[in-house]
Image (cartoon, rainbow, N blue to C red):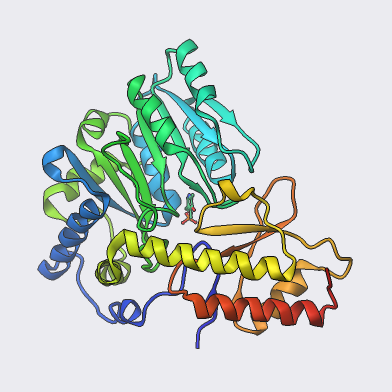
Length: 367
Ligand SMILES: *Cc1c(COP(=O)(O)O)cnc(C)c1O
């Protein structure tokens, strides 16, 4: 039996998703091309948009970061000005990308336990008219906080800015109204809430927002415009696609629909999260975020203050029991993270809680 992964991804996947990969297929095969076509149609459906409304989607090889970087490096003109609203490592990663490409940026940076308030953004948009693009993370996986993309989206719309949302760890499990929020580019990947295996990311976008970007690309492999131009009608990739990951993804989308779509997956994750919070509270663990800001994807827990607590030992002892948790990523607070997405159910959460209890007893940690 594989370990249980309480991480932000890669995650535990369904047996049928793994089995879907047991094929060799040429990247120009009719069969494969029809899979890509189907996936692109399904993704738009999941996003609640249709091509007639001017939306399309492109798959991009690589992990989620490659998808984000394809947008940042393709969608912003030389004279563009990107506002990045960040409260964690993934927002900071966008800042890093913009710096590498010498894109002019303004950064609104917040502590990792703060939901960036929209009024700061509004004040900035009122005074600095040179801003052309706004980027924000939806679920900042550093902490598991849900950022207020609704308010920021409305501002982006009101002030006529291109709106870029990294919805890597939320798309597929948290309802997002792309049209209402007027999102121009939304990025997610194969191995998070859609529960596929790693290998590619995808961008759902307004065609009108990409169409002018022909000349802006700062990278060959990550040129989103070129990828779209090539894939748009051919449903094939410019460069070698991760065939098996794509086959797995087709099955994982079917499984998502079978489960009842985003609404039901959202519910399962919320129940997992609820059970995790109840269980860890009983054990005496404290969350880093305030409850009102905590999303239901992944949770950061403060290190217990007991002298016997040692994260490496704690991690190893859980690992020996088949339970894989995740290290923290906070700049100034010692935390570890527990994700509750992927093929995880209430019984898995209960088992994890029982294992943590055992490990605490073994380490003689009491609260
Ligand atoms: C997972 C994740 C990414 C991408 O990470 P990769 O390791 O490149 O897949 C980007 N942003 C967020 C918010 C994420 O959770």
